[in-house]
Each structure stands twice: as C-alpha cells, then as structure tokens.
Length: 614
Image (cartoon, rainbow, N blue to C red; front, side):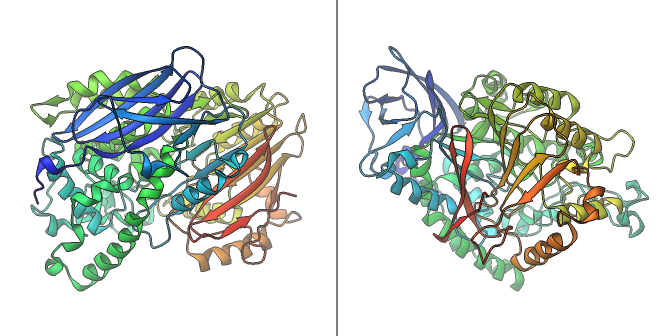
C-alpha cells in the first residue's frame, strides 16, 4: 500500500499533556515532518524546549518542555494554552471544551482519573471516551475537574493483537517509512497473510525436557513457549511494529492512512475469518472514539506506568521465565523492543526526560543508514533503573515499577518473583515515611481478592504459575512480609490510597493494621479495565466463594499472609451491592485534604457506579 507523502497530515497526534509542574509542563506530539513547535499559556511568558526523535522517513516523536520565564505556573486552576507550529497557531478546535483548551497543574489533588488495561479489539466500550465526557461536563463546575489522569498499566497489548490491527500496523510502517531493524533469526512465513493468527507457532520455545520435573508440562512432554500469552497468535515482534502499534492506539488521524478492513481474507480459514470480522467491528468502534481520547489527553496531565502487556504477558514473572528469555537472542530482542517503545511513548513523558532523557544519545546512535542496530542500546536500557517516579502533590503521588526490580527466588526458579526486591522496598519505605497521605500507584493490587489468590497459589504449587498469572504481592513471602511491616510503621502515612489495575475487574477495599503502632487507613482502589473485562459469570461465582470462605470470622483468614491486617470490602450500587465489578470503566477518585472522599466508576456505556466508603 502506498500513500502520496505530500498528502500526509502534518500532525498525527498531540498535543498530549504529560508531566505538569509549576516550573515546567511537558507535551508530546507525533508529526510526519520536522516542525518547530511552541506552546503559549495565557498570561505567561514561556520558553519551549523541543526534542525531536525521528522514527521514520515521515514519523517524528516531538517532546516539548514548556517553562515559565517570569513567574511559576499557577497550580490547581485552568491554564488556557495555544500550540504554534512554525509561528502559526494550529487549529485547536478538536481539542477544546466549550472553545477552550486548558490544563491544570496539580498541587492539591481533589479529583484524579485512574484506570488500566485498554485493549482496542475488546468488544466493550473504551471508557476513556466517558472520561472525556466527564471532563466536558466538569467545565461547568471547575472544582470537579480532574487534575490528573493516571494509567497504571497495559496501555497497549503487544502480546494480544487483533488481525486487522496487525494489518494496519504493516500498512502504516510502509506509509510512514518507519525505520526497521535488521532481520531476526526467526522462521516466520514470508507474507503477512500467512503470519496472521499463527505467529505463536514460530516464536521461541523451551524444550519440554528442559522444564522442571515438578511441572505438569514436563510429564505431558509439552514445550514451554517463551511468550506465554494464550493470545499470542499476532504477537508484535519488530521495533517498527511496536512503533506503528503505539501510533494506532492513540491517533485517529493514523487510521485515515490505512485500510485494514479491506484486507483479502480468502487466505484465512473459516474460524480466522470470523475472528477477523469480529475484531474489525470492535476496532471500528474503538477508532470512532479516538478523537475524544485525544481531546481528553490534551486537557489533563497524563502519567503512565508499564505492566506486562505493554511488553508481553508474564513479563519477568519467574526467574525461569527470565532465564529462558535471556538465553534466546530472538526472545530478548522482542522484549527489548517492547521496553524501548514504552520508553519512547510513555516513559519520556512521565519524568519530562529528567532521568529517562539520559538514554536519548545512545538511542540516536543506534540508527545506521535508516536501520536500527540496538546492540549497544540494549545494554543501556537494561541497566536503566529509574522507571519509577514521584509527583510532589498533596497527597504525594508515588508510582512504582513492579516489573524490573523483582525479588527473585534463589531456591526455586519456577516460583513467582516478588513484585519489588528488598532494595526497592527499602526505597519505597523511605519515600512513604513522614507524609500525612500518599497516593501510591501499584500496577498490581497490593490487597487482592483472597479466593483468586488462593486459586493462583494452588496452580503455583502444581508448578504452573504462568497459567493463572501468579502476580500478586502476597505470592512472595519476603516481599509480602516487608510490605506489611512498612504499612505497620508508626511514621508511615495516616492515609494511603493505592491505585491498581491489571485484574480486569474493579473493587474498593479498606485496610487497617490489627496490631499497628498508629491509627492509619489504607485504601485499595482497583480500576480495570479501561477497555477490557473479566468473564462476568465466573467473577460472580468467585465473589460468592470469597464471601463464603473468607468472611471476617472465617478461620481461613489465619492462613493468609495478611492476617495481621483487617481488610474490609466495600459494596457498590452495581447490580444490587456487588463489591467486584467486571465492566469496562475508568475510575474517578475524589479526595479532600489528602483523604479519600469518594470512589466512582465511569463505565464505557455511560453508567456510573458508586462505592460505599462507610
């Protein structure tokens, strides 16, 4: 497919508002040509510092840090702004609410939008569009306006890609001339139509006789895939695929340059054709709401953190998984491509390049004659250990990386790793102490549903932790005990609000130490997914089992690692008092003086669910 380069739009996406502080506000753009951008805020003299990252012949990632020259940006009030391209104002109509495009620099947080798990081809509605509708309504009542949008993991699904999405990815690579990497030593079929829905058959595997004899797979003589997602049939592989995939996840304009739904499906079997058509319908609905998502992200500071699907399912779940990847050049290359793309499209904006920007020079040197060679850059990004970050607000925002600082088991390589190692937990402790309140962003819930964690523990005992994603904080003895001890300290916050996702259902728990040294409360607020859902019937059964087996008086609670903490489950007004909600939604967290005041789910369908905090 070819598109006349002259007819390409200048802007593919942006402005996307990223980290916003009183001394600097960061923006992100995608353009098809070199442009000189600046942002002017009404009433301020500013200076725009621009960083251009060329990713293709007609693809540029532009990062803009806007700094005030005379007085600092005011906090917690709307700051109208205008973007200029080569000294000409761009049309901001599509990004405006009631004719106004504005940001809030958050300082005292009162309303925060939070969610995770956005799968473009899931049949549910994209609840980011409903967040946009909320923002539009809040313009009439500005104290209700969200000052921050936090996306806590699985912003993209690199391991679970729809057939028409993969077609669009390859079309966009050609249209934009996205730079490619050298061919991998992977025996993929030559044409894309032969690869559709069959890539998992060609991805690296560990021979069954190398597996642990304590696993079921060994005795069934089943080779262990390095990429363990059950939906890896269209798994992304090359860096150019990851880059194009990100563009298509957040740019409505990019979809105007491709025509994946016209793909000739005659080479697919009947089951694949049915799947392709269903995915096409879901993607078309997703595309229709992308302009609303772009408007939302132009008007609220957006912070992100990776989870596994941003790279691949079960990323670093066990030491064995890590070992298998490390021993395969192809597998390691795919994982690094996922991490590099996260750094480009998410990480650089999280800290306004303060730490992540140190990788830019090495990345630019990886391009030789319009071909990527990441031999040296892989070492740089593997050594980079500052994906976590904080925001100096009230309450303080602490976003933790639970993927690259794992507490590995030294006795059994098939045991799940702790989500943070000892050193990282000590750093977290230092960050938490001496604050009245903290907003802690942990991609996986710290306090999850006990019946589900019990089932995960059973599978783990059978030697198959990857089957049910044993990635809860309590799965690792050392990490669990250290974390609980942190929360019991007398100098930790009186109010800790934990925002989590990952699990594809939503809930609200409150936690208090039974034998703590001071009175404190921990809120576990889980919102998942933005465009994803847990099987509703199965969740209803699990909820009933959890109520029956782990009631407050149940002796089974004594066998859990968090028996020293009293966990209360808060009911919602969803389906007559459910406390587990499986429905596409994003959450609205309302706070007053650093304490939780309200917890609401904004469903993709337009419905609203309130949790009872009493």
